[in-house]
Image (spheres, one colour):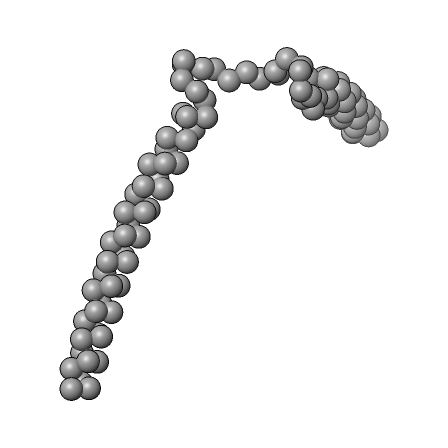
Length: 98
């Protein structure tokens, strides 16, 4: 009998915890919906960019330009190697015809 009572008490506590959790999730969802709304032109920003005096777009663009420059340099080397290979093959082909 006491085991049954203990089990019921534990189930009751678990249900109470779940109800509290659900209530907290609802409150949090409402709060987040109020905080994060779709920004419209002319409204103040919710999350401002921290600037160091330099344009934020420039800061974001620098690593991309560096990455692109490295990639372009690699492609130039690949194209040069392909041109050398094709030139050699063309010369072989020409000498075979002669």
